Image 1: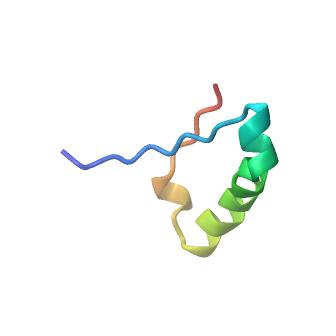
Image 2: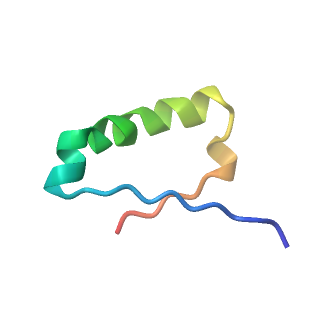
Length: 45
């Protein structure tokens, strides 16, 4: 069985003010640059 890592981003006001939106916005480009597109499964919830 392969290990899995989960990344959860906070979306409340304090996290938003602290910059969580910048992390969220940067993730797709970083994933593509690193060639990880096929290894990443994204859930919106």
